Amino acid sequence: MITKPIIPIVVMIPLLLVVLICYCIGTLRRSVKIRYKVLGILRITVIVVLAFLVNLRIMDKRYDAKVEMKNLDVLFVVDTTISMWAEDGHGGDTRMDSVLEDTEYIIDQLSGSNFGLIRFDNRSQILAPFTQDHESIKDAFSTIKEPDINYARGSSLNVCYDDMKSLLESSNSKDERLTILFFISDGEITDGSNLQSFAELNELVDAGAVLGYGTEKGAEMEYGSWGSKVKDPETGKNAVSKMDEGHLNMIAEDLDIDYIHMKSSSNITYLLESIKSGSSLTIEKADTVSYEDTYYMYVIPLLIMLLLELVLFIRRGRL
Image (tube, rainbow, N blue to C red; front, top):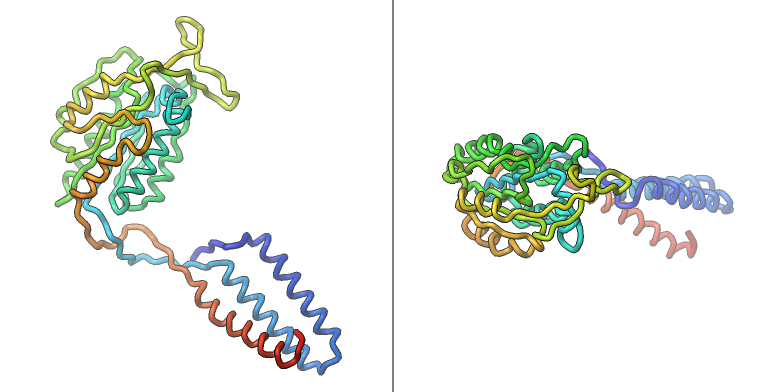
Protein backbone atom coordinates (compact mmCIF):
# COMPACT_ATOMS: atom_id res chain seq x y z
CA MET A 1 0.00 0.00 0.00
CA ILE A 2 1.31 3.45 -0.91
CA THR A 3 -0.02 7.00 -0.78
CA LYS A 4 0.15 9.75 -3.39
CA PRO A 5 -1.40 12.88 -1.79
CA ILE A 6 -3.24 15.24 -4.13
CA ILE A 7 -2.43 18.22 -1.88
CA PRO A 8 0.83 17.88 0.10
CA ILE A 9 0.23 16.57 3.61
CA VAL A 10 2.15 19.48 5.15
CA VAL A 11 -0.47 21.79 3.61
CA MET A 12 -3.55 19.60 4.07
CA ILE A 13 -3.14 18.83 7.78
CA PRO A 14 -2.93 22.48 8.96
CA LEU A 15 -5.82 23.41 6.65
CA LEU A 16 -8.10 20.69 8.02
CA LEU A 17 -7.06 21.43 11.60
CA VAL A 18 -8.02 25.09 11.16
CA VAL A 19 -11.45 24.04 9.83
CA LEU A 20 -11.95 21.59 12.70
CA ILE A 21 -10.84 24.00 15.43
CA CYS A 22 -12.94 26.89 14.10
CA TYR A 23 -16.02 24.68 13.87
CA CYS A 24 -15.51 23.29 17.37
CA ILE A 25 -15.06 26.75 18.89
CA GLY A 26 -18.17 28.01 17.12
CA THR A 27 -20.17 24.97 18.23
CA LEU A 28 -19.11 25.21 21.88
CA ARG A 29 -20.14 28.87 22.01
CA ARG A 30 -23.68 28.17 20.86
CA SER A 31 -26.47 28.07 23.44
CA VAL A 32 -27.71 24.59 22.52
CA LYS A 33 -27.92 21.31 24.40
CA ILE A 34 -24.65 19.44 25.03
CA ARG A 35 -25.70 16.44 22.92
CA TYR A 36 -26.13 18.70 19.87
CA LYS A 37 -22.67 20.15 20.42
CA VAL A 38 -21.16 16.67 20.73
CA LEU A 39 -22.96 15.42 17.62
CA GLY A 40 -21.88 18.48 15.66
CA ILE A 41 -18.22 18.03 16.64
CA LEU A 42 -18.41 14.31 15.80
CA ARG A 43 -19.85 15.06 12.36
CA ILE A 44 -17.17 17.62 11.45
CA THR A 45 -14.48 15.27 12.78
CA VAL A 46 -15.74 12.50 10.49
CA ILE A 47 -15.84 14.94 7.54
CA VAL A 48 -12.27 16.10 8.21
CA VAL A 49 -10.97 12.53 8.52
CA LEU A 50 -12.72 11.45 5.29
CA ALA A 51 -11.40 14.51 3.44
CA PHE A 52 -7.90 13.68 4.68
CA LEU A 53 -8.22 10.07 3.47
CA VAL A 54 -9.49 11.15 0.05
CA ASN A 55 -6.59 13.58 -0.31
CA LEU A 56 -4.11 10.95 0.92
CA ARG A 57 -4.98 8.86 -2.16
CA ILE A 58 -4.26 5.45 -0.70
CA MET A 59 -3.33 2.91 -3.41
CA ASP A 60 -3.36 -0.87 -3.07
CA LYS A 61 -0.71 -3.06 -4.69
CA ARG A 62 -1.86 -5.49 -7.37
CA TYR A 63 0.30 -8.39 -8.48
CA ASP A 64 -2.02 -9.97 -11.03
CA ALA A 65 -2.52 -7.07 -13.44
CA LYS A 66 -3.27 -7.98 -17.04
CA VAL A 67 -1.70 -5.59 -19.53
CA GLU A 68 -1.64 -5.20 -23.31
CA MET A 69 1.86 -6.11 -24.46
CA LYS A 70 3.72 -5.83 -27.76
CA ASN A 71 5.86 -8.74 -28.93
CA LEU A 72 8.91 -6.46 -28.98
CA ASP A 73 12.20 -6.55 -27.10
CA VAL A 74 13.73 -3.08 -27.51
CA LEU A 75 17.42 -2.74 -26.65
CA PHE A 76 19.10 0.65 -26.20
CA VAL A 77 22.90 0.72 -26.46
CA VAL A 78 24.07 4.18 -25.40
CA ASP A 79 27.50 5.77 -25.75
CA THR A 80 28.20 7.60 -22.46
CA THR A 81 31.74 8.76 -23.18
CA ILE A 82 32.46 12.39 -22.32
CA SER A 83 32.07 13.44 -25.96
CA MET A 84 28.33 12.81 -25.60
CA TRP A 85 28.23 15.92 -23.40
CA ALA A 86 29.36 18.12 -26.31
CA GLU A 87 26.98 21.04 -26.72
CA ASP A 88 25.65 20.45 -30.23
CA GLY A 89 22.50 18.50 -29.48
CA HIS A 90 18.91 19.60 -30.14
CA GLY A 91 18.61 23.38 -29.77
CA GLY A 92 22.04 23.79 -28.21
CA ASP A 93 21.54 21.12 -25.53
CA THR A 94 24.20 18.51 -24.96
CA ARG A 95 24.11 15.39 -27.08
CA MET A 96 23.19 13.37 -23.99
CA ASP A 97 20.26 15.69 -23.14
CA SER A 98 18.97 15.01 -26.65
CA VAL A 99 19.49 11.28 -26.22
CA LEU A 100 17.46 11.25 -23.01
CA GLU A 101 14.66 13.22 -24.69
CA ASP A 102 14.57 10.93 -27.74
CA THR A 103 14.75 7.65 -25.83
CA GLU A 104 11.86 8.70 -23.61
CA TYR A 105 9.91 9.45 -26.80
CA ILE A 106 10.74 5.98 -28.15
CA ILE A 107 9.70 4.30 -24.89
CA ASP A 108 6.38 6.13 -24.89
CA GLN A 109 5.74 5.34 -28.57
CA LEU A 110 6.55 1.64 -28.11
CA SER A 111 4.67 1.33 -24.84
CA GLY A 112 3.89 -2.31 -24.06
CA SER A 113 7.29 -3.56 -25.20
CA ASN A 114 10.12 -5.02 -23.13
CA PHE A 115 13.06 -2.63 -22.82
CA GLY A 116 16.74 -3.16 -22.04
CA LEU A 117 19.63 -0.70 -21.62
CA ILE A 118 23.38 -0.96 -22.08
CA ARG A 119 25.71 2.00 -21.52
CA PHE A 120 29.37 2.11 -22.45
CA ASP A 121 32.41 4.34 -22.06
CA ASN A 122 35.71 2.80 -20.92
CA ARG A 123 33.69 -0.31 -20.19
CA SER A 124 30.26 -1.67 -20.95
CA GLN A 125 27.50 -2.07 -18.37
CA ILE A 126 24.02 -3.57 -18.54
CA LEU A 127 21.92 -1.03 -16.65
CA ALA A 128 18.66 -2.90 -17.26
CA PRO A 129 17.98 -6.34 -18.72
CA PHE A 130 14.73 -6.61 -20.67
CA THR A 131 11.82 -5.48 -18.50
CA GLN A 132 8.15 -4.57 -18.95
CA ASP A 133 8.44 -1.88 -16.27
CA HIS A 134 8.68 1.40 -18.19
CA GLU A 135 9.36 3.44 -15.07
CA SER A 136 12.26 1.12 -14.26
CA ILE A 137 13.87 1.66 -17.66
CA LYS A 138 13.38 5.44 -17.39
CA ASP A 139 14.96 5.33 -13.93
CA ALA A 140 17.90 3.43 -15.44
CA PHE A 141 18.36 6.22 -18.00
CA SER A 142 18.26 8.79 -15.19
CA THR A 143 21.35 7.16 -13.63
CA ILE A 144 23.46 8.09 -16.66
CA LYS A 145 25.81 10.86 -15.56
CA GLU A 146 28.76 12.63 -17.15
CA PRO A 147 31.93 10.59 -16.55
CA ASP A 148 34.72 11.91 -14.39
CA ILE A 149 37.25 13.71 -16.59
CA ASN A 150 40.02 11.78 -14.78
CA TYR A 151 38.25 8.50 -15.54
CA ALA A 152 37.87 9.14 -19.28
CA ARG A 153 40.35 7.15 -21.38
CA GLY A 154 39.20 7.92 -24.92
CA SER A 155 36.29 6.60 -26.93
CA SER A 156 35.81 3.16 -28.47
CA LEU A 157 32.66 1.69 -29.99
CA ASN A 158 33.81 -1.90 -29.51
CA VAL A 159 33.52 -2.31 -25.73
CA CYS A 160 29.75 -2.87 -25.79
CA TYR A 161 29.90 -5.77 -28.26
CA ASP A 162 29.81 -8.68 -25.78
CA ASP A 163 26.94 -7.21 -23.70
CA MET A 164 25.02 -6.46 -26.91
CA LYS A 165 25.46 -10.03 -28.07
CA SER A 166 24.35 -11.40 -24.69
CA LEU A 167 21.08 -9.45 -24.55
CA LEU A 168 20.31 -9.90 -28.25
CA GLU A 169 20.74 -13.67 -27.89
CA SER A 170 18.51 -13.56 -24.80
CA SER A 171 15.78 -11.87 -26.83
CA ASN A 172 16.15 -14.28 -29.72
CA SER A 173 15.73 -17.27 -27.42
CA LYS A 174 12.09 -16.27 -26.84
CA ASP A 175 9.37 -17.51 -29.16
CA GLU A 176 7.55 -15.13 -31.49
CA ARG A 177 9.29 -11.95 -30.34
CA LEU A 178 10.91 -9.25 -32.45
CA THR A 179 14.25 -7.81 -31.39
CA ILE A 180 14.64 -4.05 -31.91
CA LEU A 181 18.02 -2.35 -31.48
CA PHE A 182 18.82 1.34 -31.08
CA PHE A 183 22.58 1.95 -31.12
CA ILE A 184 23.16 5.52 -29.91
CA SER A 185 26.45 7.38 -30.32
CA ASP A 186 28.33 10.26 -31.92
CA GLY A 187 30.56 7.71 -33.68
CA GLU A 188 33.76 9.23 -32.36
CA ILE A 189 36.74 6.91 -31.69
CA THR A 190 39.64 8.56 -29.86
CA ASP A 191 41.51 5.68 -28.18
CA GLY A 192 43.34 4.62 -31.33
CA SER A 193 41.31 1.45 -31.84
CA ASN A 194 39.77 0.31 -35.12
CA LEU A 195 36.04 -0.27 -35.36
CA GLN A 196 35.34 -4.00 -35.32
CA SER A 197 32.66 -5.61 -37.45
CA PHE A 198 29.17 -5.98 -35.96
CA ALA A 199 28.03 -8.19 -38.84
CA GLU A 200 27.79 -11.35 -36.69
CA LEU A 201 25.00 -9.69 -34.71
CA ASN A 202 23.00 -9.05 -37.89
CA GLU A 203 20.85 -12.17 -37.61
CA LEU A 204 19.95 -11.28 -34.00
CA VAL A 205 18.34 -7.94 -34.93
CA ASP A 206 14.92 -7.68 -36.60
CA ALA A 207 14.71 -3.88 -36.86
CA GLY A 208 15.93 -0.65 -35.31
CA ALA A 209 18.43 2.05 -36.12
CA VAL A 210 21.81 3.54 -35.38
CA LEU A 211 21.07 7.01 -34.02
CA GLY A 212 23.78 9.62 -34.55
CA TYR A 213 24.23 12.71 -32.37
CA GLY A 214 26.36 15.80 -32.86
CA THR A 215 27.57 17.75 -35.86
CA GLU A 216 30.52 17.62 -38.25
CA LYS A 217 31.59 21.06 -36.99
CA GLY A 218 31.61 19.71 -33.46
CA ALA A 219 31.35 21.44 -30.12
CA GLU A 220 33.17 21.91 -26.84
CA MET A 221 32.39 19.88 -23.74
CA GLU A 222 31.78 21.09 -20.21
CA TYR A 223 32.35 18.99 -17.12
CA GLY A 224 31.84 19.37 -13.41
CA SER A 225 29.58 21.72 -11.46
CA TRP A 226 31.72 24.75 -12.39
CA GLY A 227 31.24 24.27 -16.14
CA SER A 228 34.94 23.82 -16.86
CA LYS A 229 35.85 22.97 -20.45
CA VAL A 230 37.52 19.72 -21.45
CA LYS A 231 41.05 20.46 -22.66
CA ASP A 232 42.89 18.91 -25.59
CA PRO A 233 45.99 17.35 -23.95
CA GLU A 234 48.11 18.03 -27.05
CA THR A 235 47.30 21.71 -27.55
CA GLY A 236 46.03 22.75 -24.13
CA LYS A 237 43.06 24.44 -25.82
CA ASN A 238 39.38 23.60 -25.36
CA ALA A 239 38.74 20.20 -26.94
CA VAL A 240 36.16 19.94 -29.72
CA SER A 241 34.27 16.72 -30.30
CA LYS A 242 33.07 16.02 -33.85
CA MET A 243 30.61 13.29 -34.74
CA ASP A 244 31.86 10.57 -37.10
CA GLU A 245 29.00 9.43 -39.32
CA GLY A 246 31.34 7.09 -41.17
CA HIS A 247 31.64 4.79 -38.16
CA LEU A 248 27.92 4.98 -37.47
CA ASN A 249 27.06 4.11 -41.06
CA MET A 250 29.43 1.12 -40.90
CA ILE A 251 27.65 -0.23 -37.81
CA ALA A 252 24.25 0.32 -39.42
CA GLU A 253 25.38 -1.49 -42.56
CA ASP A 254 26.77 -4.42 -40.54
CA LEU A 255 23.50 -4.76 -38.65
CA ASP A 256 21.35 -4.09 -41.73
CA ILE A 257 19.36 -1.34 -40.00
CA ASP A 258 18.87 2.37 -40.74
CA TYR A 259 21.28 5.11 -39.80
CA ILE A 260 19.49 8.28 -38.66
CA HIS A 261 21.18 11.58 -37.83
CA MET A 262 18.99 12.75 -34.95
CA LYS A 263 18.17 16.45 -35.10
CA SER A 264 14.84 16.05 -33.30
CA SER A 265 12.66 13.23 -32.00
CA SER A 266 10.50 13.50 -35.13
CA ASN A 267 13.38 12.11 -37.21
CA ILE A 268 12.53 8.64 -35.95
CA THR A 269 8.73 8.79 -36.09
CA TYR A 270 8.48 6.99 -39.43
CA LEU A 271 10.57 4.08 -38.13
CA LEU A 272 8.58 3.76 -34.91
CA GLU A 273 5.33 3.68 -36.90
CA SER A 274 6.78 0.91 -39.07
CA ILE A 275 7.88 -1.07 -36.02
CA LYS A 276 4.47 -0.70 -34.38
CA SER A 277 2.64 -1.78 -37.52
CA GLY A 278 4.80 -4.91 -37.72
CA SER A 279 4.26 -5.88 -34.07
CA SER A 280 1.42 -7.85 -32.55
CA LEU A 281 -0.47 -7.38 -29.29
CA THR A 282 -1.09 -9.91 -26.56
CA ILE A 283 -2.74 -9.72 -23.15
CA GLU A 284 -0.21 -10.84 -20.59
CA LYS A 285 0.30 -10.85 -16.86
CA ALA A 286 2.65 -8.02 -15.96
CA ASP A 287 5.89 -8.85 -14.19
CA THR A 288 5.65 -5.63 -12.17
CA VAL A 289 3.48 -4.41 -9.32
CA SER A 290 0.58 -2.13 -10.27
CA TYR A 291 -1.39 0.14 -7.96
CA GLU A 292 -5.15 0.70 -7.72
CA ASP A 293 -6.73 3.86 -6.33
CA THR A 294 -9.00 3.36 -3.30
CA TYR A 295 -9.95 7.00 -2.64
CA TYR A 296 -13.44 6.40 -4.07
CA MET A 297 -14.19 4.27 -0.98
CA TYR A 298 -14.05 7.47 1.09
CA VAL A 299 -15.61 9.86 -1.42
CA ILE A 300 -19.14 8.41 -1.11
CA PRO A 301 -19.37 8.63 2.72
CA LEU A 302 -17.78 12.11 2.54
CA LEU A 303 -20.48 13.26 0.11
CA ILE A 304 -23.17 11.76 2.35
CA MET A 305 -21.81 13.62 5.38
CA LEU A 306 -21.61 16.89 3.44
CA LEU A 307 -25.18 16.39 2.21
CA LEU A 308 -26.30 15.80 5.78
CA GLU A 309 -24.65 19.05 6.88
CA LEU A 310 -26.35 20.87 4.02
CA VAL A 311 -29.77 19.54 5.10
CA LEU A 312 -29.14 20.54 8.73
CA PHE A 313 -27.95 23.97 7.61
CA ILE A 314 -31.15 24.51 5.60
CA ARG A 315 -33.31 23.40 8.54
CA ARG A 316 -31.44 25.45 11.16
CA GLY A 317 -30.38 28.38 9.02
CA ARG A 318 -26.82 28.10 10.35
CA LEU A 319 -23.89 25.66 10.56
